[in-house]
Image (tube, rainbow, N blue to C red):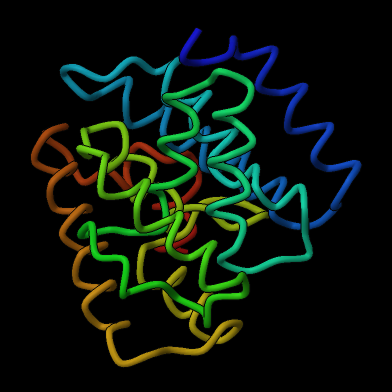
Length: 200
């Protein structure tokens, strides 16, 4: 099975939370919720599938505290369980624009581990599910939904910015435009409470 059931995904997230509790867990649930809400309006995406992918996108943080190393840890762990599609999203979620050099932090693994990320990524063809989780990763804070720009500032303040951060930000804003067009609506309107907070 390339993807666990929603219940099995929740069990995996709970197990990971026991190993490394932190705000990444409610963030993951909000990524999953955002993906489901957007998929309900999208012409081809399956809301249940993308909700499951959202729950598991950061599962590599089970080995934490870690930074970008969680990309590899999540990919290899889920691959080992036989969940190839969930593993793919654990790998791709941090690279909007499909550019590995826009990684947010200084790589906190070994050079050999970075090479494993690069080799795995080279075998992937990104699809609409990958792009949606990349977008939802910047629509979700631990306590609720946010705009892309709010999340960019949140991440930048915590991890700093690099020479290619602006390239990553442009790719994330491009994903927002893509899904606005695919859904025929500003996707912020699909996320409960977000537009109300922006207008208050």
